[in-house]
Length: 483
Image 1 (spheres, rainbow, N blue to C red):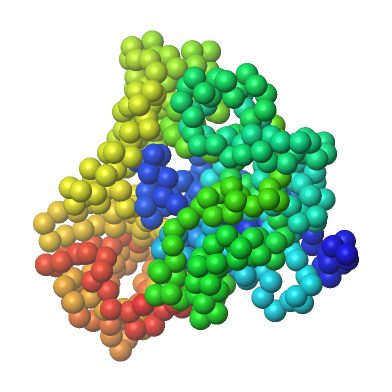
Image 2: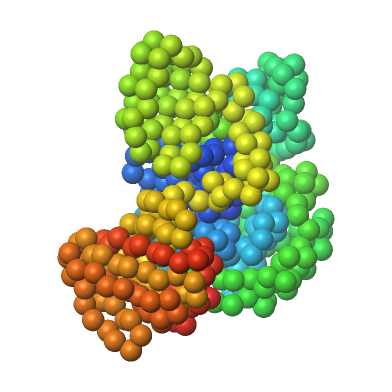
């Protein structure tokens, strides 16, 4: 009977990509408003999210469904557009509640408005994992499909390459097929001795956090084991609003949802868990040392990115984003340079980077929130200088894009066009400002900026006033739905 369910769609797989999280252990590159899933960590051209989408190429699948934080909505949408998905549906979580509720929202969305006998297969992927062997990855999915069609909740276990203490493990039970097993048990992150025993036994796999199962199958198991989570997710989605390609669940309802992972809520309790063993060059890039391990290295074991000069340097990761970084006589270090922060750490202690982020938060600083360069749905700005009562930004507006109609209570703005053409609304006047021309926006003046051309508009903005925070914006009109 189950084989008849899927004749309703030519798309067998419905990818669900979880793109939440902040990746604080990869600071200073990963920030709260620009976390690691949106960064180009292992590829010069594609972010981790875009690589996740790209490895689906060649499979018979529907367009991906994304789940991400409200703060990341435009970043996610723009990266999906760049990947060739212009109309990607994105579910916005107003607050993080771990993976069990997030997957429940996606499952409820997939079964919405379809026949109750239809059980679309969900391929649940994390947006920030690395998989080097795409053919092996796709082969593993094909092995999992028949199991999922038999109402199994399939997880993908990674064949361990060493005794790792940073991952949870899955113990294999009886064999169900090629590289496929029932799950005997899930175990927490072990100590070194236990991890070595797991590796020697050959019966344990790393828990990857990737899954394949029917949407209704998951919802039935969630109803059995955590009905409280399912009820709140259903209520939050029932009262959701649609905005552009975003689905906004009800914030006050969803905030009441308990936090729980899919492992604790469902996988460790169900009698229908199965695991497919995957040997595909997987890594969750959970730390700078993990990135060093998967990076290409020179003859001295160094992995360099950017403008780097090294002398007598071994087994070191250096990432230089904006200037020259030189090393002399060092070994086993991680050196990460951005426009506004520099990290130097020993590779054995990079797990403690998150403690630095906590200190930054507690000290009331801002370097954990965003980079100096900030992406917006209309383009990007770079805060190149600031001081008492002034701030200077380099602004790039994409062709056809428009900033909101807005007003500032505490600052005036001077705009100098470097290249392209700006269409400026300044009070009751609208006019063009071209290269090498400038204009002035007084305090309290309603104004807007638009790029009517076919090339990027680049300008220098000089702000002056008693308060220069980004929250000094009163928006009157905004094509991106911001308030």
